[in-house]
Image 1 (cartoon, rainbow, N blue to C red):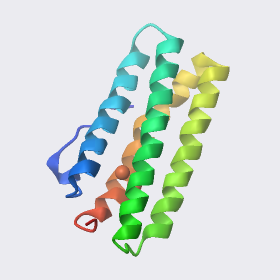
Image 2 (cartoon, helix red, strand yellow):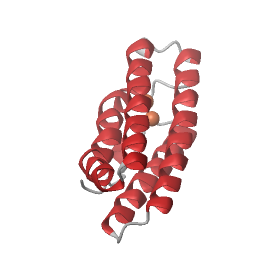
Image 3 (spheres, rainbow, N blue to C red):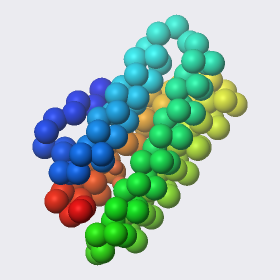
Image 4 (spheres, rainbow, N blue to C red):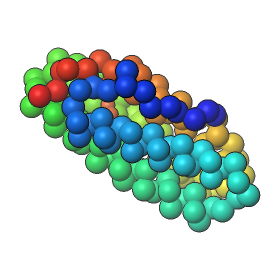
Length: 130
Ligand SMILES: [Fe+2]
Ligand SMILES: [Fe+2]
């Protein structure tokens, strides 16, 4: 697991979406740092819950803007959002059941979980949102 670094090339050209992407990257990186410290399950669970809430709200906003803009790839983009929500739910469940193995899963998957969508689906939104 590596830290995700924000660069301007990730900008999709919509101020609110770009701000949220920066904030979400900071949250993912914060969890990454927490996992390197002696285990504090409660703190990690709290940050994961915040990330889940914020990413749900972010996806809802992106989907609304895509619909408003008549974006042609809406359906596949939304499908990937739905899959990401399932995956974070899965990671959170595993962590709450077994923090030792759940931590390994998070270390393996969390930053890829976000950056894969971000560098592929979200990158194609560039200048497509109102
Ligand atoms: Fe997206
Ligand atoms: Fe996004």
